[in-house]
Length: 266
Image (cartoon, rainbow, N blue to C red):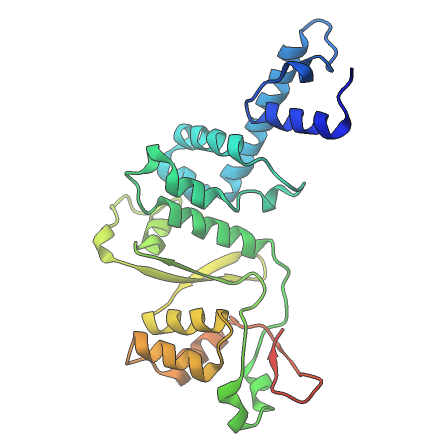
């Protein structure tokens, strides 16, 4: 009896993940090659294609571990996480977590954070370009309302924090970079990933700036976020730090609440 469509889809997905099922092979026609062989060819093609897509999304990871290692790691990931949607640029959100638990990569403790950075850059690049908050926007807001203002990051922007100097590791992995190794003892990196007109990029943040951004992401007001920043770094200067981030176009434009409350980021 032919498989019902839901069962056929489940059987096919299981096959792609490496779990062969006899009832699936029975539904596939064979001529010069058997149904089982035909299915294996298709599985190989899908896994190979998804591996290429992952390499394009996580180029820094591939450079650091080499093509062969990455291909093996990608194959293991595909077996556990097939795409749930047709846009391959959106495939791989769970890859950094997979890398963190991937035994053969345990000697590279920073690799999962590099994967997070690669993913953040990919997500930013594929985000639409929205209108950004400017100094002119703030000029129209009463001074007494500014401390309670809530602003959000611009479309595609994100904060990537690591105990390792992943900014230096990323730069060292780029084509033409010096072969000098990166000293992991240089410590943590806090990076703000941003959508640019034709690309995506990141900038390194000071400790106070990172705490400020992290608080804003959680919905804190400028005043509350500044308090968190000062707690992380007593030398944090709100005017200077906020001005720098404003110049980087890190924040989304504001919208006015219809009930007359203070503006909030879109």
